[in-house]
Image (cartoon, rainbow, N blue to C red):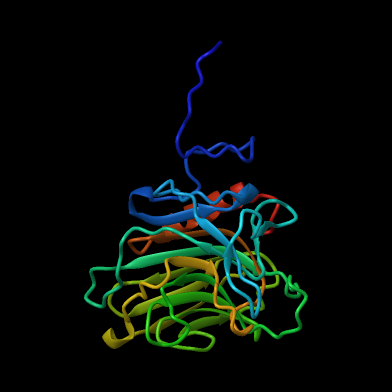
Amino acid sequence: MGTVFTLKGVNFNNAALPNISPFVAKSSLLLGYSFQNRNFTDEVSSQVARTFTSPLKGTATTSNTIPKATSDNLGVDINEACIDAFINAYTLKADGTTPITFMVVANRNGEALSSGQTASPYLAPLINWGNSFDASAGLMLQFSSTGKFGIRYNNTDEGNVKVNDNGTQPAIYFVTYDGTSAWTVQNLTAGVSATGTSAAADMKAVSTANPVQVGTKRTSDATYLLPANVYQVAAWGKVLSATEISTQAARTRKELSSLSL
């Protein structure tokens, strides 16, 4: 019998493109998930995220089958579903000490709710970092049914900084915060961006009630149940340079080569 070597972090999902990690600047990575073939293992902690079914007007419960894979097996279908992710301890401040970059690869998929209930969902939480669904805590990267992609950090609507984006095609999105006041939202696939500024008072403490979530377990109404396909999510504890963002986008495009990113 031969010797078997296990290489931690190596991804051979696309046999033509083996790589050590799907993410750049790994020393600064706070969390990193590439959901191909329903892989829920965090690149940083190596912990497996917990997954939930969260039906409208029902109770969120753990599930080994929800969220289901997208039809191409490159991502997951967040439809009345939630992923409880892991993240290194990190609290955003406004004193320059906590810059951050978020990346999400996603699209709205146009599905009706999987439970068959009739509703008009408004927002799709793609990365919910301790936001309590109001303006009192945390932040959220999200799609809206009105054709926006953005970041909300002191807002209950479409977001504080956002771009016009119907989200119907998969795209690579980056959100950066310089740790003081400057925010940038980019859709690298469409080549559009927006900037905004925040005040120190906007940086609310992250709610400890929830870990970082993709999707939501808030099922009392359909507001946050807009279905979406999510392929990758990541966060870094710094503002990635233009070169790093370009390199990350190229790495993502190779890993998800059948998507038009």
